[in-house]
Image (cartoon, rainbow, N blue to C red; front, side, top):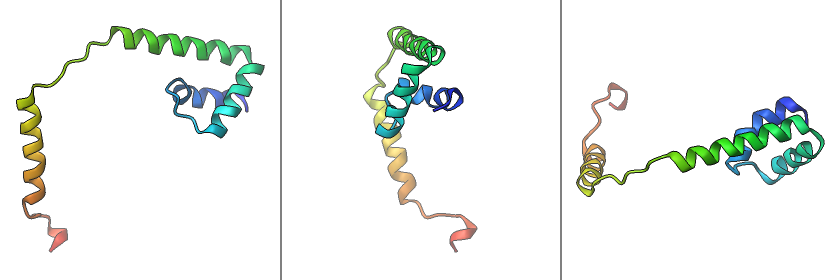
Length: 85
């Protein structure tokens, strides 16, 4: 694997979203390339900092119910699109 491909996969690797084949090739590349290894370590640290700083809020149940109600009612309404006639 070349560095440009490794950098392309870096974000997915940080998020553990690589296929096993991609992960194997990526890991092998990191063993051989100190520049990409350092970049990967920095990307993981950045993700960790962001996760520690992010504030999550739970939506009120009334909002969830309203959204779900809108979602269900839009499925019941007939389509007015000229393409469905």
